[in-house]
Length: 425
Image (cartoon, rainbow, N blue to C red; front, side, top):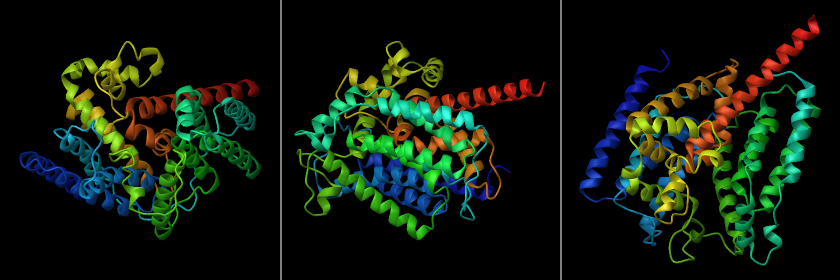
């Protein structure tokens, strides 16, 4: 069986519990009951998958959404004005589907001491990709936010002038993970990725830096760390990201306190999680402007394959996080489960989550077996791009990134096989 029947029962009961809590919270106009329950389940998932380091990192990111919301709620701070609290319980309900479905997956029984994810053997291909990656990294331009009088203004300029090159280089770097490498080749990759991370940090692009750090992790560490070190790494990494966020805005951190967790310098609580949650509630107000679910299917498929710059004006609703800004200002982004629900409804959300749980189960419980390459590529996209597809655009950053990476692998596989056949003649 693909999943343990007992775990399916646990996941189903969890989801049923969330649905009941949703209706109770709605009738009481209660805004903390759903996130409290979700926070507990998210913590259970982190503990459940503690033997898979990178997956735990992704789950910790999910955990921060109910955590951040509750921190602001119970602190009495003012929420960002874009929130529509009529929709907040529905936003957390869609996210609870994701968490409940992950309960279907058995807990990994052992740590992976060394991930064997190399499928392609070609030194020429390796150095070609390395050269393209280094060249592209050199073309990444921007201003050093730490040398600017207005660090946040410099960051906004860098963000405005950033092109798709930043994201495509991250996709390209994922190929390094599946190419067979010597120690010297591994060093070259780490050096190249370190340059990208350095430039991203000084330009204020912390999300891109984090994504490339995960690729660096595959190159340099390439194993699961012990649980006692994992929780230390998660908490300290979270703190460092907060401090970096303040430094990006030109703030000097004199002491570490509650102000780091609930930032109200501008009269309301602001953070990545607050921005994403408020945008999610706002976009649900325009559900009637989205086409019928069946008409949305080709739109979603197009958004999963064709770059946004080509079809963004033709199918604007295929990108809910930007579509909503045609009607009101939001901080940007939106939870992936909310966006899937908007486009495909609960049936579409369930189908996509079942697909995700299926390939994640295949990878997370691989033990000493080498996983199928396509499963590996899907997992790499899942953990490398998680800040993007969870918070901004699932179909653009998860589906399309997966499609591009798999197509690159297929092209390379066919090319190498044809080349081998020609040499054997």
